[in-house]
Structures are given as structure tokens and as C-alpha cells.
Image (cartoon, protein in one colour):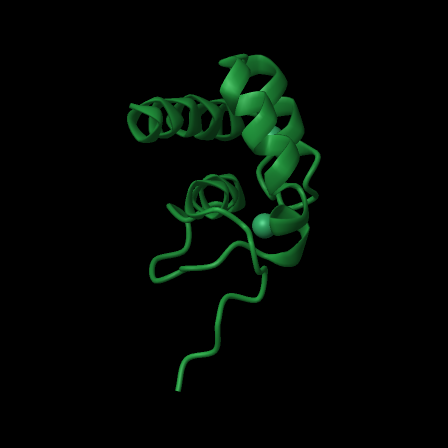
Length: 90
Ligand SMILES: [Zn+2]
Ligand SMILES: [Zn+2]
């Protein structure tokens, strides 16, 4: 029995972006963003929509979920999220 998404009303895209920000790449099988990232999904979506990768990377870093020293991974996530957004937006 699968319960409805814990974040009702949260658009799919928003969840996808939060999941990328949360690091879906680093954890195989991960299908949900953590609470911290989910809570930021609205902000992430807003920044993603502007296409500002730097600002987005900074926002991702600010989730407290960044366990790497370099911000390159965050930058990569940002680029990926913007790419994803552009695909979905079409
Ligand atoms: Zn997270
Ligand atoms: Zn970072």
C-alpha cells in the first residue's frame, strides 16, 4: 500500500529537482529527497527557473546535505537541474 506523496501539492518537477539536489547520483535507489531538500524545493525551483547555475549551486550547498568539500558536485547538480527544468518546461 503506497501512501500519497508526503508533500501534497508538490509538483513532480519540484520533487525531481529536490531529488537531484539531494544527490540521487551518489545514492543508488534513492527516490526521495530528504526533508531538508524537500523543504527547499520551492526555492530551488525558483532559482532553477532563472537559469542561474551559480546561485542554484549555492542554494544546494545550503541544504546541509552536501558532504563533499568541493562545490563542483553542487555545480554539476545545478547544471543538471536547469537542464531538467528546460526539458520539462517545453
Ligand atoms: Zn537532501
Ligand atoms: Zn557544495
